[in-house]
Length: 351
Image (tube, rainbow, N blue to C red; front, side, top):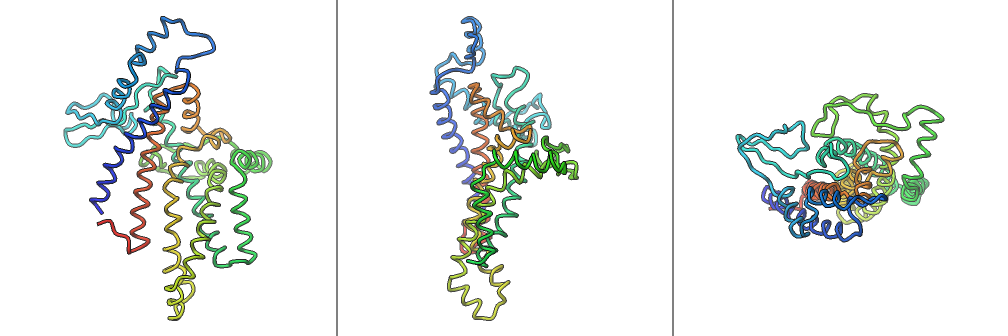
């Protein structure tokens, strides 16, 4: 298992290299530039800006410079001027060695903040929202799928699949305002916008102190964002569980007199959850970085708004940094999924 994890970590750098190259090419292929505005910038000012951000260099040299600054680790014996709690997880202290990695550089839209500053301030909020939305999807989706499979072609089955179809069919842009109007404006039981803050954070995004003052802000956006994913999980859980319960080893367990509850929980459920776990990795990465609509509806200060505005403003460092972060989350989430395979199915080994 250790060798397998080490290989996957090495593959992470290969994935980042390929993703960065494709993103860099597409980003510069789009017409326009980061300093194109309705009011044209004087040529002298534009030339100085491009020289300052090295945009006047050939694209190949710009890409090599980006690789050197962002993807290649920088090792030094001199402590950096920025401490760990002031930067975005790019300084690692190992004995007397300092390793700096993924320093995304300045942002073109703000002189007072860097891309790392944006990630440090906004990414924890998006990670919180994505984590709670995934929990909502799992808590609703898996029991709903199990109930529908065990009560196939009954009223419970029809109800569960109708709820799943509703979750898939109604987008966040419709469900979010409805929830805000009903629970935030009419009933006034939950705040219609905002996001609770309870620093300091554990692991960079989990608040160390939980309370109603924090959770009351998370309920509406988490349900609005996670309901669609719960529908996907419910339908997949139902389909795979129906297939598993017809296998020979399930009939053998029942023939031995094992209780139906144990047959489902010990034998059928674990194997039926393998396809569900497969989609949880990409789903988690997507929920973390793809929450722009939810953040706009509920007024959440997350990362999604900056990613969208960076595309319209041609803010190349923010675009590259966000996509590379998504690639990192996706690779790590898939690695966790592969490790869970070995737990769910003892036949799977990574020796």
